[in-house]
Length: 161
Image (cartoon, rainbow, N blue to C red; front, top):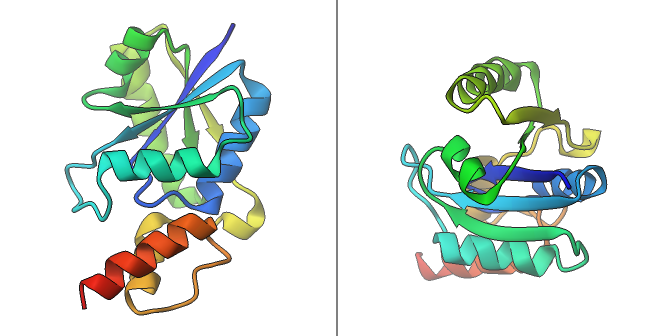
């Protein structure tokens, strides 16, 4: 049985993330979405809120689990018996960063491999920061995120004005 881990901050989860989750569930026996805190960024949603939004969006994927994760992803992989780390690639600029991370992860834990998946073309330009910015100005995000994410972002930004 192959257990894969898809780590990220998912703040918020986008349709691009969900596309990768769905395809990963077809490729691997079990997929764990490891929701983490990015210490370099101020989070819009708590880890618990992000986990709940992902859960609401992925109920149709029986081999997907959602968990919180702190620390190095290779240590987490060792703890949960993960053999594969899934990373999304949107553009050439992602590749250099992701390659360095994959090589370092392999050095830190030689038992874990990294697999890169690209989202569908219509999601190649999406990232959570862009979604948050559009939502903060009241822009249309319904094509890019699940309905429940859109509603949570609207509430979050309307209450802060």
